[in-house]
Length: 339
Image (cartoon, rainbow, N blue to C red; front, side, top):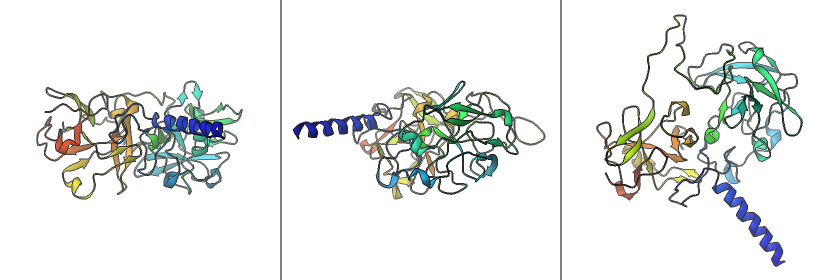
């Protein structure tokens, strides 16, 4: 009996360690070193795949989401995400940043595949607005053929329970709705067929929409690094406002405690495309859905804010406020030095 107890305890300890290591070595004040991947919903916590782990964030049974072949892929316009791709029944299709398109490879297995069912390549075809040359398949570990778009393995999301749902967008900072060219869908994206270019490549701003074919003027990067003389390299927004984190928030489970009157002084930073965050590892960039439904930028799983007391670019008047507000370094860590 004692051996059995020890075995159960050891197994539980390993499971806890696996969960707490999912987001790296973030210095969570609620439990230093324990954090998870950024998630798209404040109720989710756990693995970087979905955030399931029991409670209100639990993943529905696999049969609650349409499974099987995609049929004829369709392009659907979204006010929030631009042109998106759905299966023949209207269910949103996704890609996973940890997969690879060249060569195509799926890294979503086991529990991940329960939350993110792989879309079968059988009978899949390209509808209007999708280049059929971009469709392909990849063999999964179980021998089944998974659909690929521009090389990226294609998935559905178990929490999308009806056609048109996009609840998987931004989950873990690594799951994204597919655009017709295989890139992550984003507002302003065109609905034309893919070009065949590597969808994982970065690059300059794309040509502006419309028949004029002109390019959008260059814009400042939404989030970058400011070399502060007192605090060192810290994160700031396009206007040069310093970004802060709040020790009373939590990175595991992801949660905000800046609500009500707090928001009069500390403004949540809107989520941005991680490709537009410069000077910090992309894997640290994520999003968090606040209780009011808005998406907030997270760095190393921590929600980001600006301080209304900072009046000029580069101000650090919020540093150390009440002993719980701190600037964030280019490594994603809180800066404890005084301004």
